[in-house]
Length: 510
Image (cartoon, rainbow, N blue to C red; front, side, top):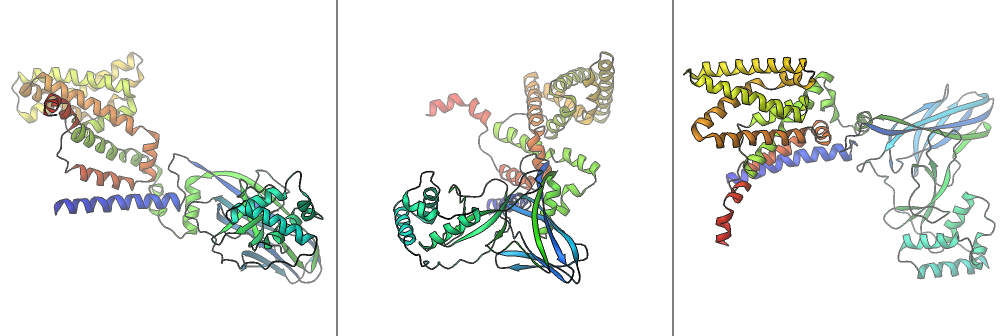
């Protein structure tokens, strides 16, 4: 029963930690890698027209949950115009209106976008009806049916059918049927409409979407028509020029359908242009925007909300559980002997300031000198508390003397020796001397070397940039460490060093 309780507790802790981490990554977009910057696109649409002098209205389509992007914010610059936004089928639209306008008028729409996360809200769209077969006239009808029959024989589903058809339709050396189908195509928009009309002969739902290719510094961008077909589950995009599936890189889906992008009532000579700019923002700022859009308050209780000085403190403190778990592994599973549990962790933290090689050197020097003085104090027959106090005083004097000598010799790392945990060093010297007296020099040296090895391993793990980033940005992962520590707390099997020790007996048993 106790084992079941422990396992359930460990499962709840691990699930809570991993679940919150998964939410931060997938919904808020916090990366698992130590990346501090994220790309944010700013897209501006400029609508200019000439007002007639009376009431004026402008209707303009806006992006509606564009795939591949998260909308961080949008704003409108419209002067004295009234503004209303609404949904119109698969699109969103803005309506500007004013009682009186005369002369040249300019309206602006600006949107900020970041790369979408895997939990970004998908576009919810109804399944379209199958189109009716158009009433083609001859010889157009014969060419359509011939091409569709040939493509159908070389495809397996709607996706492969569309791809095969587009490749054949855009061939550099088209056959006579394709030449008939391509006759009279004026521009890219007309091309996509012609493709839709032909696909309707196979009763494949299709539509035109208009995309904007995002390029840093673009000033006079225009929308491009793109083809989408429905496979009874979702809309699949295809390049109408090449047949390649998907959208091009950094393509923003602006609107769906063939309706005019902007309609002006009370004015004329409408001109629309797009400009784009890429900027770099902090990942945390982008994640906070996503949290605001999702009405999530998770980041309000993150460590980033603390003062900077407190954040820096926790960047170090949150590494201690990593070191503690490493000690559990190396002691209970591997079987390395150490002096206590916290000494290797704290020594590893001190190594972060002294550098590893110099830290190992100064640790051996202090422990060696302290141990020699501790043996001398043993001859004085002191009581426990005065002896420990004397060892502590000696350790501090040794640290101060070592720092002074190192400074005079120009060894800058020796100054940081003051960061060594003096109380832990004093207790280590005392413990090592007792083990030396009771169990012999070999056992004392084994535990001393084991402590140093664990401290080195802890230093290598705790100075890893990836580990430090994960425990600070996702401190809930420490719950997973706690769960694993609790499970290891019931481990009573052989340690790896014991298997090596009894290897001869295991061979004979085999």
